[in-house]
Length: 623
Image (cartoon, rainbow, N blue to C red; front, side, top):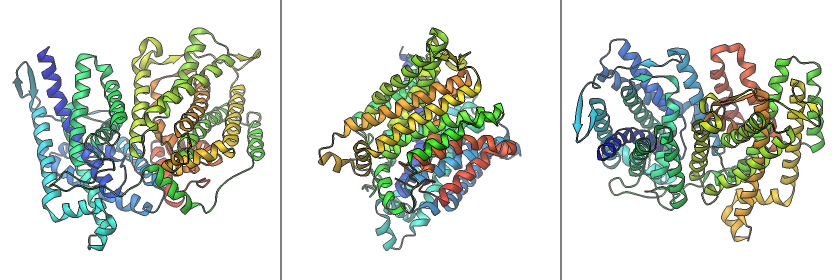
């Protein structure tokens, strides 16, 4: 028992040191640029592949690692200059989505250049073994731990002793005052992105050596873990990022050793939710987000508002034109769309039905994130809950379509209300982590609860059933059912937003403390909007299960939630008509880009970047 504990503790410290490096990249960028850089995982992957390529060309592994770190730092600085600096005056979430678009482009580009398959990465120290009590460490473990600690210590010295480090800290604490003192604030932001790229590249090389392989999708899971570690310790705290990385690594490995490998991530994310409920600012954070504090005795607070407040401020600045069609106009367009099966092929009808499903999801998340201001990065879990309810009740228990729709809608509404409770007390970026953790817990339950969900094998053979004796088996009837459900969801959303309830949701989004002070029962209204959003997500999930006749956890991953957030932002925060349009466009775009074959995701990412650059307030405008 002692040997197991020691072994898991040592492994946790090793992998935790990698998480800490990634978390430091998030903390640097957030502290200096006030931005969550979701391209950090992509930079990790690129760094590993740059080193892999250099080694293939005969460059020694140490030299390859150094050159890779420098090259990835340059890529990070280029990303800031070309894709993010033009969005400095855009709504706060637009730069965040730009980093997501960059990650999509990087992952797709890596598949084109190096293939989607895993590639072997040399690990010359793997054969060296050192025993510590009843446990052991390989040479790679020791190198990973020592290099990580050395880099962390060097970074802290750099931030506390060098002029550039002090300039970075000054920019984090007060950009306006720093600019008045002669500091080039734009350059400091670019340097922060470069340093984050270098840290990501180093972490990627260490990960590649640890697992002895590289592959294009490696950046996503480690990027998520690094983000979680940064928020666990305190998002803009350098010591907090280090502490969060080590704690997350230890939690994971102890869970793996004592509960089972399948419960590793589940327990880690559950612990994150608990920590957020007790200390939402992170373990070493303050009531406000801490700047690059704890370094050389300097600390302070970043003068920043939450994502929600930033969106509220953006509303007044960007209300140049807002799409607000009459209800009868939208329903009329849907009625015309019902004629599609008379002219379109089966493939077109299938794609159109999928568009209706994602339009429902966009509506759902627009109510929660756009209108009420609860930024959710885990909405795919609610979508999946509705799909699994449909699959299990329909395939295993033979429920009728009407019963399945009611169970999926109201069951998901109840689940959404419960899942949102941890996030209600939170504000700003802590909401993002809480909803991300809840979404990951949902995905992991789909993946590991094999007795109920069949795990990664999924549930196949889902029958479409009948309504009032009318078979829903033909594809065109499934399409019409999807349109009817979309129309119902749109009418509900429209009526709610035009009522005092909708105005109250927007008041909470704009200024939650003021809403509290005015006597608004904020918790009740947020639970209400979560339940309504869950109801719509459940209907979309059930329809998705019938359309695909198959559900598996792969459909409800983090990337799905990110696509949904993209729909909400591109539609216009709080604009339900814009959400439907964006949902249809982003659902149909990958199909329309099939002519580009392997390049289609790169083109998709470039289009997303272009939309964010030239219409950051969304297609329909912020309402």
